[in-house]
Length: 90
Image 1 (cartoon, rainbow, N blue to C red):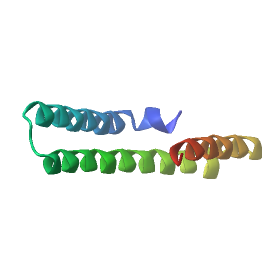
Image 2: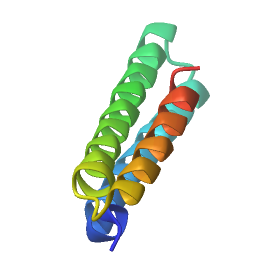
Image 3: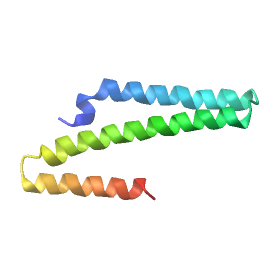
Image 4: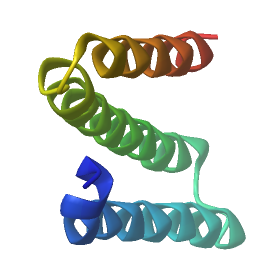
């Protein structure tokens, strides 16, 4: 079973909080709040996305690399992670 399935409710809760934060930015812009307030809201979303990403990467390493049943699965897990990190750091 994939780690995203095992942690589904926790991950969905984090995504729903992110959605709420994005909605807060929309409300702030509609209310014509100052740029400082909007920037703080954006920064909080960036932190939340970074935290979610870190959690998913950690779980991937534990389940698909360290916890892999054989060297082939370990290599596949590592290749997947490398591809994601390359995309993330662009």
